Image (tube, rainbow, N blue to C red; front, side, top):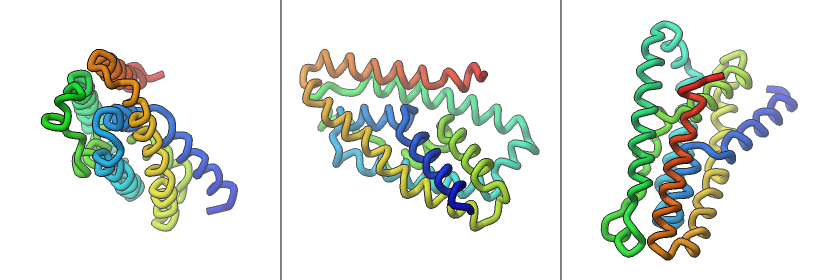
Length: 198
């Protein structure tokens, strides 16, 4: 991989990882509701789960969609349904006085599995492997996955910290409820490019 292509890949990985999307919105809500420490498994699940996803997509999973177009439709419907379910869970998160007893952030495995129904993760993985590993060689795919592995986790962690800092202003149950409903609405809005592609 040339120096210019590597620099372009690093830029793409950073911009796509740090900008709002389902993962980052959920981490922000988790940081606000559960704090940084309890959200660490969620962050690790995203970072490692997405890196694994890039490897699998680069290894030829995208050819399955070409061979069986209906599988893409099934994935899209599953993604929409699961994101709507998560939005409902965020909107109805327990108030601060109840969260320690009842609330639970996503586990490592749940966050890793979520990558496979996350429309933004699919777009990122497909773009990264086709644009920055055009030869589809094992070395090129490993470089793409390694770059995302190095950049993704620190980027998504920023959203958890932001949510945790916002928790200072969300000590009132009414404000926390409004925040959770706003995050849920933004998560649903993130489905717009999936439901109505350009």
